[in-house]
Structures are given as C-alpha cells and as structure tokens.
Image (cartoon, rainbow, N blue to C red; front, side, top):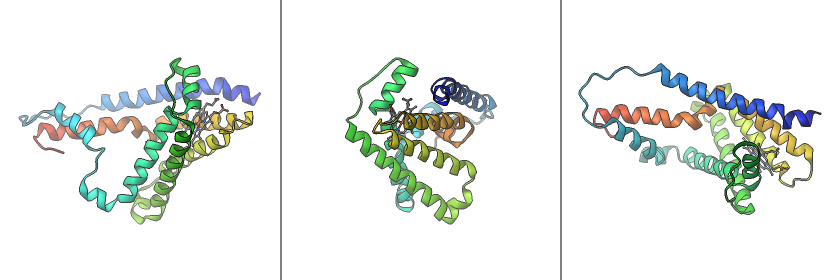
Length: 213
Ligand code: HEM
C-alpha cells in the first residue's frame, strides 16, 4: 500500500514539484532583471559571461592554497555524484523507464562504487569543515545542513539498495530521493542551476567594463 504510493503518486508529485519549482525560481530571478548599465562598453559582455562561466571551474592560485580541502573535497563530491547519478546502470534504467525513455551506456559497476566512495568522502569532509571551521559555521544556516544531510541519506539508502535484495530498501531509497526532489527548488541546492546565471552575470558585468573577472 505505502509502497504503491511511493512508487506512483508520490513519485509524480515530487517530479512535478521539482520541475515547476526549478522553473519558477529561475523565471523569478530572470524577471527581477538588472539595472541598465549606462556606461560606454569597453569590452564584450557576452564573451565576459562565457569566460567566467568556464574559468571559475579552475580556482585562483590564492584559493588553491588557502582552501585546498574545500576545493578537493568539493570536486570529489560533485564529480562523484554526477557519475553515480547519471552514469550508473540503476539510475540510467530508472531515468529511461520513468522519465525520458532514452538510455545511454553506463560506467562499469566498479566505477559506480568508486564514484560513490569519492562522493561520500567529499560530502563528509565538506560538512565537517562547515561545522568545525568557525567562519563557515557562522555562515551556515539550517538549509545548508538539511541539504547535506538529505543528500547523505539518499546516498546511504542507495548503498543499502545496492544488493537489490529487498523491495523495502529500494522503496526507502526512492522515498528519500522524492523528498530530495521536493526540497530542492526551495533550497540552496538550486545552485546546481543558478551557478551558471551568477557566474554569467558577474562575467558579463565585468566583461562590459573591460575587466577580466
Ligand atoms: C551512493 C549513492 C547511491 C547509490 C549507491 C545508489 C544506488 C541505487 C541502486 C542500487 C538503485 C536500484 C535499486 C533497485 O532497483 O532495487 C537505485 C535506484 C534509484 N536511485 Fe540511487 N543510489 C545512490 C544515490 C542516489 C541519489 C543521490 C539519488 C537522487 C537524488 C538517487 C535516486 C535513485 C532513484 C530515483 C532510483 C530508482 C528507484 C526505483 O527503482 O524505484 N540515488 N540507486
């Protein structure tokens, strides 16, 4: 009974809440607009935007030395998550069957497991740094902690579902993924989409002023 609810209505509700929520957040940011820049352009805003969107993947030297842990753990978590979410066989099968109808080649199972281990290690290191460092602790609010704990729980239950031994374990994993989808648009997890806009905006503003930011 509860299983049918998680597999059916709750799945469709969470997917709808995710899609509508993400679109609504992005549209409201775009509609807020920006003040017109009346100065004479000294460079190209478009080129500046494109440059900053990509150049920020490689940190400045000062960041590399001062925030090495966050940098390495950040890459471990995000790359690991990307691989396990979009290139692991069970997730590709689910996306193909329940969302897109399209499927693509998966990474070998051992790559899936290594990616999951990297993602776990990265997430735990980032969260420990957040709570142990006085500055990041002060800057963090409840949303930061809920986001981290929710992702951790989805990943943990994913590990329990790995053996595909019990239907209940799959359902617990699916249920937490659904809670994650509903929470996503209303939280800082939105940075998965908005990072392109914020980098692009900074790059365009600076590019127009002729500054390489
Ligand atoms: C360490 C990380 C993870 C591991 C090891 C993992 C593992 C698995 C496995 C083995 C299944 C297949 C279950 C089965 O068919 O019995 C599965 C399904 C699924 N996973 Fe994950 N997962 C992880 C992270 C995530 C994350 C982060 C999300 C989403 C935010 C997610 C969403 C899903 C969904 C929606 C399904 C489909 C459930 C179903 O078939 O009904 N997983 N995962």
